[in-house]
Amino acid sequence: MMSQLAELHSSEVTKNSESEKQLKFFQGCVAAAFAERDHSIMEAEKAKEKEDSMSQKLKEVQDRVEELSSDCCKLRESNDTLSINLAKQEEENEVSKQVINKFYEIREKYFEGFENTSWDEKCRCLLHDPPEMWSFNDNSTSRYINSLEEGLETMKKTVDNLQNKLRMDVEIEKHLKLKVNDLELKLIRMDDMVKSKISGFYQYYSQYRDHILNLLDKEKSNINSTIGEIEEKITLYGREFQNFKDSERELKADNDLPDEHLSINAKMNIPGLPDSVADENLEASGALALALQEKVSALLLLSQQEERHMLERDVNAALQRKTEELQRNLLQVTHEKVKVLMELAQVKQELQLLKERSVHDQGADTVDRKVVTHEREGRLRGLLKGSYLRRWVGTPEISGSEAAAHLDNEENYSSRKSGVDFARMKIENATLRESIESIEHLTSSTHRLRLSLLKAKESVTSEGPATSVLEALKDIINEAKLIKTALSSSLPISWSGEVNTGSGRETLHDSSDVLGDSNLGKIDFVSAAGFEMVELLIFVAELLLKDHTAESGS
Image (cartoon, rainbow, N blue to C red; front, side, top):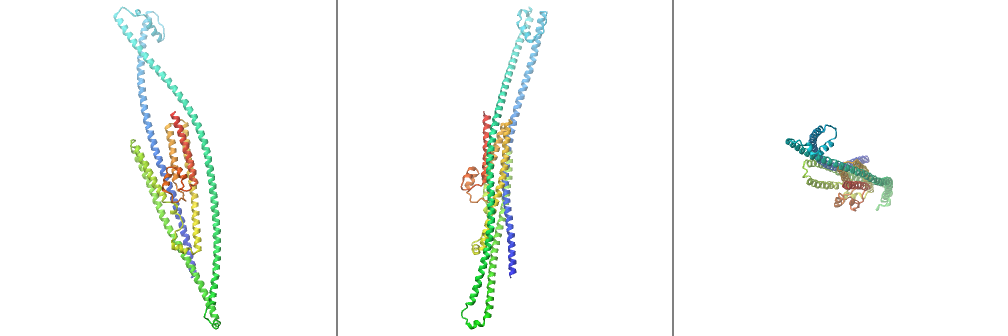
């Protein structure tokens, strides 16, 4: 019978170990599913924002190309008209030159001399000649001369007009050259100003970066000290548990001695027996007392074994219930992940439909998309609120009758206490891991935003288009605000589900409420450092945007 009880005990112990391993496995699966779900949500939001920005940029580029193409067509038309007018004027000048040459040759033949002079001299000589010199007492000749003079006057007028036009073109060219010089000087001054501003920004950035690094070093030292304290608590708990086991063995040894004394006293204090009968049956009574003592010890041992088996059966039932609950929770997390992926596909489909719509309806569609986005964020917030840690990891629930039965056993009390301490240590370890992963993700996002800010600064210094610089700075500010929203809406592992819904909704809009609201409890150091870095990036981007708009306006 003792061997059977020992075998039953060993089998129950192996079942308990297997159930504990299964429990650890399911808890790991649940934590991985949480991390994957949060990552997919963040990727969906980033993809949506990136697609919106790219569609807006594409539309602006198309508008700009259309404007430039129309300007180019107008310039080509004006150049064509000017070239045609210039060709006509050159033909007229050639004709007038030929007429002047002809008259000058006639004049030189009359004076019997020919000199190769300039066109201005030829014209001056012909104009200063007296009228009698060109009169030949012939009406046809005089009419011919009058017609020639009229043609000459018209040619002079055309020449004057051409000279006026050339003079105006020269003045316009001079004005344009002066304007170009002024613009070059302005660009040089703007370049110097931007360089000075960027150097100031770099100094601010280095100061804040050193401050943030100091904060991170302090928090790292705090984490190391916390880990050391946890290890010390674990060692102290092991020592206390060993001392408790030793004291329990001593109490069991002390409890066995009074039972023997009670059986001997009961045997010696049996009333109603005469002395003669006691003397005659001394040997029989000794054997009977020995048999009774063995029977009592066997009964006590059986009762202890039965009580231990009942305790183990209750613990196994509680573990089985917890395992089933974890399986149900894992299935629910899988369904939630599928829902999030379906929402991501729906968002992509809506984006495709928005791209196919016209420019006139884009303003109203933007308002509708913002409303849908806020509603979706509310739904995701509700899903996160329904999945806090107390639903997934916790101590096994025990009914009232089981608790009443277990309170009488000191070994059950110690096991429940050790289970609570072990769960607390698992929660602290998971919190530290989540903090490290959050720091890595926050560092990568901040580094990417910083590189984007440097690219925007380089485009400003390289005299890039103003619209592209403004759009880059606005994209950086929007992405930083998105990270800020994600920090305000993220839930740590040790988060309690008793957070107020109203205050949680306010965190999506104002990060200062998150840092100062007492309903949300003490914020962790990762969120605080993230808020500081994101606020610094937003401040630098807004300052650079303000300076750029002021310079472009001036």
